[in-house]
Image (cartoon, rainbow, N blue to C red; front, top):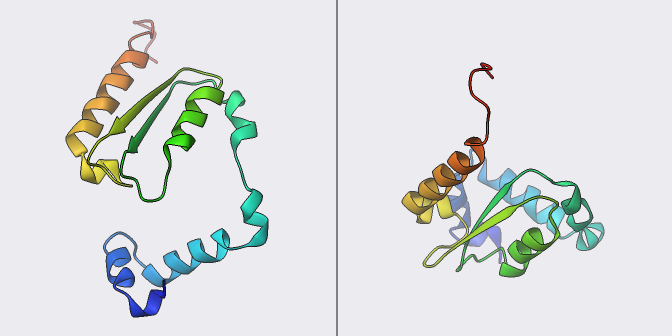
Length: 119
């Protein structure tokens, strides 16, 4: 894809102040040879807090394997929400479903706090 000859700058400018810097920043990092081996899986077991992983089933960048890896390798509880008819930005594609999932998740994990300590 040629950044300069497509409508990608226009699309990115809706969400980023400097579309060119955003694109070339991503592009330059993702195409570096050292980045091919970049992986966070070794750190997942150290994450022990509850995780809510929300992914669109039609995500054009992320994969279900990534979500499954988070769920399988994280050191704490993981809730996954996979949204049909949803791409890379669930908060835009399915805002009501995302808000409902976050509210339920926060209420669930926040409901275990003792009362009366002011914290």
